[in-house]
Amino acid sequence: MRVAIVHYWLVGMRGGEKVVESLLRIYPQADLFVHVYKPEAVSPLIRGRRVIESFIGRLPFAAKLYKNYLPLMPMALEQLDLRGYDLIISSESGPAKGVVPPPGSVHVCYCHSPMRYVWNMFHDYRNTTGMLKRLLMLPAAHYIRMWDALSAQRVDHFVANSSTVAQRIARYYQRDAEVIPPPVAVDDFYIDPQAGRDGVWLMAGELVPYKRPDLAVQAFNAMGRRLIVVGGGEMLDEIRRIAGPTVTVLGPQPFARLRQLYAECFALVFPGEEDFGIVPVEAMASGRPVLAFGRGGATETVVDGVTGLFFEEQSIAAIVDGVERMQALPINPQAIRIHAERYATAVFERRMRAFVDSVLAEPERRRPTTPALVSVG
Image 1 (spheres, rainbow, N blue to C red):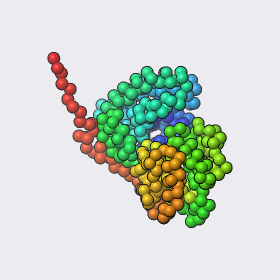
Image 2: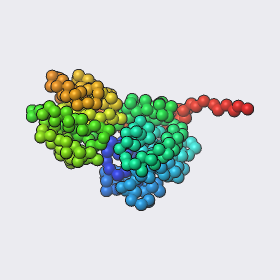
Image 3: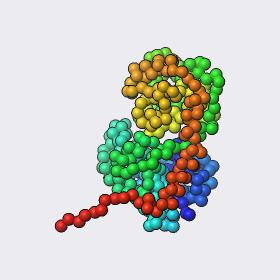
Image 4: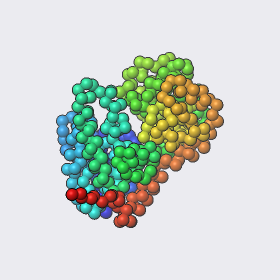
């Protein structure tokens, strides 16, 4: 069986790329198709496989400016030659699923989220850009939305990384989706018996506006409690500027340091709304509880009152209240760790393989049922 895996771009190692790694372990014979590929930015496992770029990768400064070529990506996907492939698995949150599958093939889309910048977070992205890009986004996003919804019909089966994303798939594409959470390297984390002894909280992840790191920093400023902030991103300078004397902003850190901070912290604060949210699961794999905004994927991974708590609005007061409530929460590191193990990489790979095998074994499941077109006149 010839297998093609289609990903949006390979310019770093984040959650989407971890999914690609798992897919490559499941299907070691697969070829990998992407828009842009930076070999030095990815893992040895990915570098060891055959990677084919779309024409986007040959455009000027594509390795840095690839997102500016978004309007060209539908055309680039449709030019990829997938003849001869029996199974196509697309990894979607940027344009990836819009390939043209050959007759007789099966196309499964693992969807991290329908493209946020044209669907559920369009106005958030538009409001943070300059005037020229804001004007250009209107027609470009309109065109991409139409193409994106139409190209969803080229997918035989959707798999969503969370129920939150499955609901978006139903709303924007009118399609059902199997829910299989993404892989988390649970075994890379450990429990520190002395965790939380200093009462220091942790916030980790990319520092971008929709994740609302500013709220957490302002809340800990107001309380005078200690917070360590780990991560890079466009808001790093702003977060350093507003951080008070009890907030330490470390910026990006190597993995060894991050896992140590997870293990030692009292708890993780997670103020943003995510599609799934790997960071809370990594904290729980370290036996630490999570204070999360009660929307999005965190509501599916954090068990309120057991592995953490939720706050119900994105405000300083709500975070302050949540931190105070967390002080009274009984913390059982081993129970929190056991809960996190349901998201382990091996669990994802077993479930994903079983789902694809079931589709391949039942030809009648390969295409979704669509209503017949009726000609009038």
